[in-house]
Length: 342
Ligand SMILES: [Zn+2]
Ligand SMILES: [Zn+2]
Ligand SMILES: [Zn+2]
Ligand SMILES: [Zn+2]
Image (cartoon, rainbow, N blue to C red; front, side):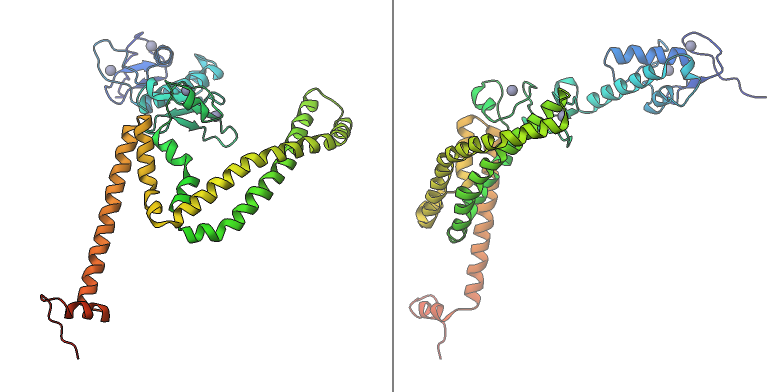
């Protein structure tokens, strides 16, 4: 004899399509299951409780998927396809929020609404969507285009990982050998005084022209007329670009001086030692109250020092085993060592 499937736990109905839940064995029909999911989605719940009053089981995610399957024609008698898709997306969002540690640990990109979980040390978030790439502040959730937001704001502080990511050029320069800095200085000079002003000069007409063209297209202007207008205006844009390029020279000059001072300082051994990146960053972290960051720098510095001591120790051992002529000379004058000379 064929086993009779249990009736729906909620409405006691005997519909043809009923879902028997894998964790507790209770049964729901399509209508009751969907209304249950709607309720829990509206309450922002990721885990749905079995509708049986005294049952404490949660509905297994696979059972939830079965209730949200848009290919199941029976379900579409109780809900429209659009509503079903909406329900599935909202449920997925709730599940993700739950998985990432709750709503307080979730932020959405202010532009494309992509969801992000919290990452320690990262408060200046860049949206991972390649078309969006919007930068926003984790603390206030607002779009931010520059670091200034963190300097002007008591509440929103930059994270230690942001500093690490943002100071890569600075880190590179500080750790580079002074001889290398001197060698690359002609390239840096070219980059600073030729490439940057040239870039400013020509990128201004290019980007402004592009924006103008897009704007005229939006206003449904004739394409040929739009291009003709832009060609006519280009000399003016070039002139403005040139002024901007000349103004950028002040900024470039500042950069060049900073580079030159750094190179000079690194050539003086004592000053070079003081230019320890980790010390500088640790100082900086202390000033802005990033204790976690300060601890990480201190630990990595300790590790680095231990590594150097270990290396020196190994070198010293090697030198003792294979005395150089200089070592022999030293040994001759030491009362403790007796090294035969021939
Ligand atoms: Zn039912
Ligand atoms: Zn149950
Ligand atoms: Zn985005
Ligand atoms: Zn903020």
